[in-house]
Length: 190
Length: 237
Image (cartoon, rainbow over all chains, first blue to last red; front, side, top):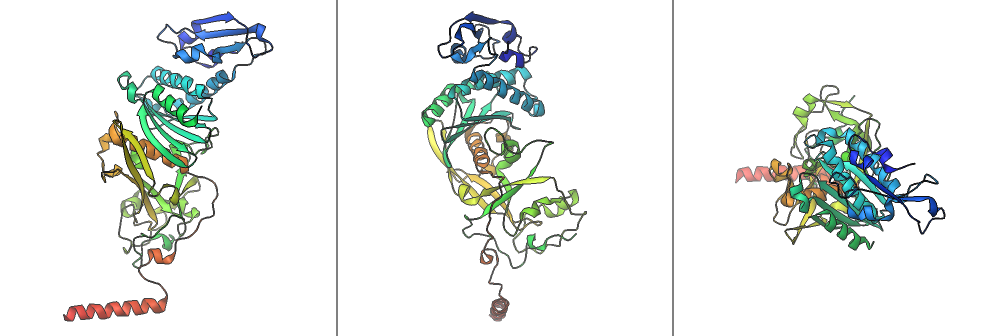
């Protein structure tokens, strides 16, 4: 059965692989719903790598055992995780202050939030400033987000968001993931 | 191989201060391995080829496209060439032409991107700090160098007239805080947003914008004659 876990290194994310609740439930919008499986990572564990209530409770964690297809967000999750992993391996020097696990945890947590925006396009780069640099396109808007992954003490200023409405530059502000997400939703009306 | 003389400062040249919003800036890209310049998902030039790290964009080197042509991005200075020529100078400085292999070489591995000046010049860059909205702006400044009269700097200035590039280096280090962090992050987003690798039809700057006087030989002769008379008169007085 295809799962995101198959594409996420087990040595780095053991909890993701081992602690997974599954339950058979009907899927309202699928013909083959009877054979679908609902799965979600364990939220009580501090080492979970979805790390967010919103994703664990959303439909994004649906996977199908019948047709081997993955729900769109999960496919995207895997795609961006693989992209990130490649990026990480190419830029490991600029992140040498941080453990690989810490950086990946930060990325996975942010990505799971950003995917809830249903972005038209999304990219991730690791900058030489040791930030995770995301570009999100949604409804004619482009959002550039720098994630400063210093420490837990800095979560209220962890992200810096710059917005463009087509070619008109909007305001730049810092904040935590929820305030940044709120700004994006409000601006792009999504 | 001769160095293109049209790139060097010249005693007839002056600092470019006229309106150049219709022109473009160009900057070379050094590709890293087999990488793509463009991110396939967003269609943007990748950050690493444009504006990384942020301390490099506080005073961002570019060239004015026109007399500096796309083929000139292949020029790179040797270590010795950098020592002698990679320094700022007056626009009318007398500079000895660079010597091939000693001062400069040619590489075919470079790509480039362009930015339309009108997209960034004097454009306000608003940011919020401690709940208060501030406005910085982007400036395009002519900063001739000994190897290249057409060298331009993209700089950022806040509403207290403080230049980003004048700030202490350690403000760019971690933990990066305050307006330096916000403005430098906004600045690089701006560069990524407007960087363009497509072929463009670019215009060439008008001669009167960079020459001290009309270079029509007759006019130049009259100008020099009048200048000489003026100098003689001033000495008599």
